[in-house]
Image (cartoon, rainbow, N blue to C red; front, side, top):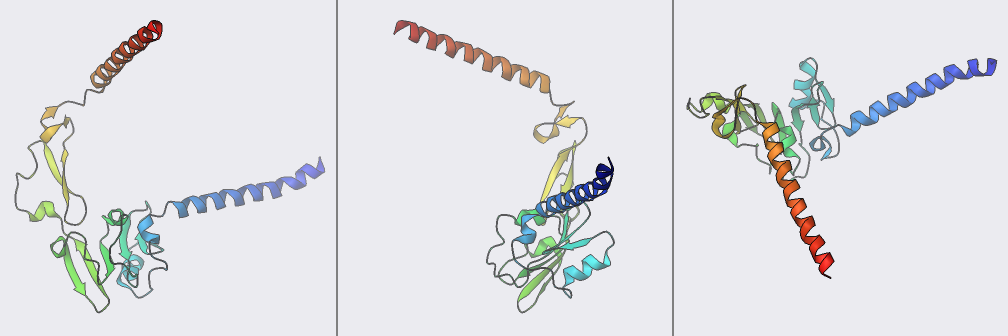
Length: 205
């Protein structure tokens, strides 16, 4: 009995250590690929590091400045020998500031950013412009939809609550029951038909 009592605290410590290790591994695995695409970390004097340190609730991980939800708000790819940003670049569509190698253009082009500064070896893209406000076309989205920014140089039309479908013209919720009912009955009918056909062929041979 005394042996169990002594072993209990050490087992609790081991369990707590395993839990912390698992959480640390999970957090490391959850880091977006664009942040670890290039080895190294954000340099202390870079604009991304300064932005991240001056804004409460942000933290630096590898090449990214992230908020507590893991959303990328800053990306520093300077000193990376990249000609192309790669397939993971869309993960940084929420970034407010990016430092990119000289050969990699700011996503969305120069007009998608408030400030683009060119240096000898890199360029800084800062402040995504909201195309919903800058297009000047009030009828860009349908009557029952609203415009929302979707990354640098991109926007999307989102249907208002209670509307769906092409140009948000259908009112009410999407008829899931009817859709899956028709799909299920059609699938069942075709399956029975094919089963009957195969059975006839089996009997004939």
